[in-house]
Image (cartoon, rainbow over all chains, first blue to last red; front, side, top):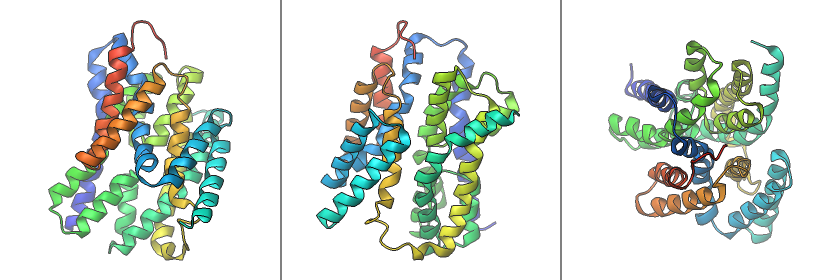
Length: 99
Length: 229
């Protein structure tokens, strides 16, 4: 096995471990108290926000404005509609700003 | 498996397919550009199945980083899955042990978010629905890896077409989909601000785990006491 194949296999096993690990740890505890429930309910917003935040805060005003407009669109539109609005806005703003 | 449930899940995969397609092609193109074979690029997509961490791994490996450090870095990028795993177990009460073991392999960001939203509306998910969502995404991700690896250089000016923006845009859409949950706005604000501070101080990829834990800790501190999801 080449070094890179070893890296891939080891990384795949560890990645799988991250995907089962949270459940395996939590399932040892039986019923969950309300604080743990509240924490788990916050997981989607908490984690996914960190994947958007660098683009929002550090990529420049074009990206920031496009995300704000898309975020407002998401209050009224379904996911694909919001997606279309955001895509159009970024293409137009980049064309206008020469980015 | 119920085929109607499988198809319902597959229908929910469409936005994921659109938003991740450029990322899959880009991954394949970068992998080959950095000196990987098409087979090596594919092996990563088939077994690790976590795009951001695959790119980090390739970047470090081609800089002749020690193997253990490459593996450790991929692990840290994927640490957020521990939180997904903990949260989503509650939605898998109807799964057998073997079904859970299979399902967790496919637990990528959009798989988690769409499953949570579906479970919120339907009170849980079936294995057929979950796999209906997962398999099209997994299949296309692996096809895109190969196509990107072979033809990646053919995409002209991806930035002016906004291609690089689609993934964060889609993640924003997922975040907005949870706006009815208790403490949503404070969690988003705290996770966002803390992750960017961590990005500037500690650096990537730690900002994801640090920002996420800040938001989850806020919810644990101020949530609870009979407030339902």
